[in-house]
Image (cartoon, rainbow, N blue to C red; front, side, top):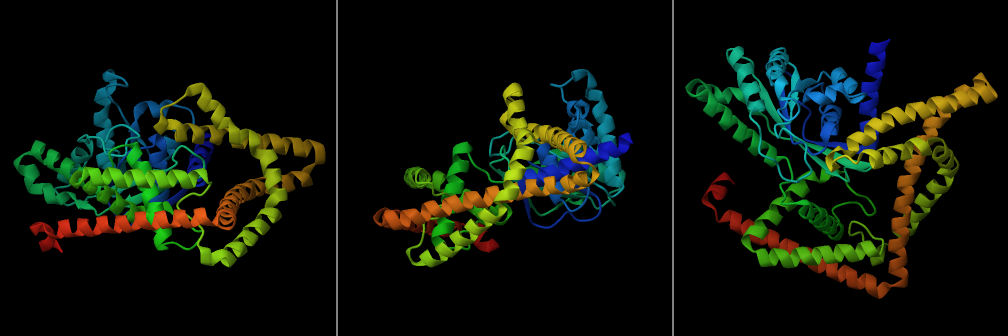
Length: 458
């Protein structure tokens, strides 16, 4: 019975992760056979859950040992096949146990399984990678060496990117990169095992940099999303009123990030002018209640009216069930906020605290409601409530998101009608900013084309 409960908690954690975030993957699922997954680590325990949800096959995550002792979190890690890592800052006396952890990781790889390692060693909220530890390289090389270099172990980098990562219904995307063949380091390992570890670690760092947004600070991250949103809206790269999922946008965001870094290094003054203009324009749109650069197009008012009518109808039809969902699920919805006020965790641990609190609060409140219903109305009412309450919760979620879309559309449409001159002015400003972005891209392409190695590669 206890084992069933642990499995339910773990499955509940994965389901809650899919509900908490809009999840997506850019790239293929993990290949079959032995795979060492290496990922960046911006969101504490949630990173492992996201990888598990999008990987396409089970993975054994390595996680710091104290997490295995915590309620709910420890149960989830055990059920997912997690392996504890002992760090000096946690308990120096237990460092010797890492040998057993490495043994278990190597054994799992030897049996054709997938193991997940976060080589940065600790979770953090900086957009750039922290210096990597050597553990992933040592595990990979040892696994191949013990198999006489016949294992065929591949190291697959996964870049995790979040949008509003601490908030319910934020976005999480995994970018799966090209695999590294561990066997390529066979000769280097035979010559100098320590140097081979350093070389493979450097290759892992390069592979992770290719699948993550390498920025210079949180301000860059805000600027990146603002610039990309303005460009996409102005160039019509998405359907009107729609927004691509984060996983779909990742390749484009990576190009924007690389372009930002190039422009800052090549022409800091030009970068500062363009960045300031983008921030100013985005801030002005935000004050008007318009997000993501979605200024109304003057010629699409009938399309806008039809969209408003559709969203308005959905909002009205869903209102009764949404109201029931608000009443039924309000307490567990706000419970994570209360826990955050008490514990005040680090920013990268907020989503983990919210998920763990929700995993406890929602089933508890559900059970209380069912107990009240069966006491007041009997068995038939219990069956109806057991089905209706979860449906009402999902309708509430759907209604909330469409209501926000409806409000945004109304604000944009009102701007086009009541302040036509301002709307035209903002459109002209946005068009000028995007034209400047295109000129930056042209200069970047010219500079890249002037490099001999770039020209040869293309």
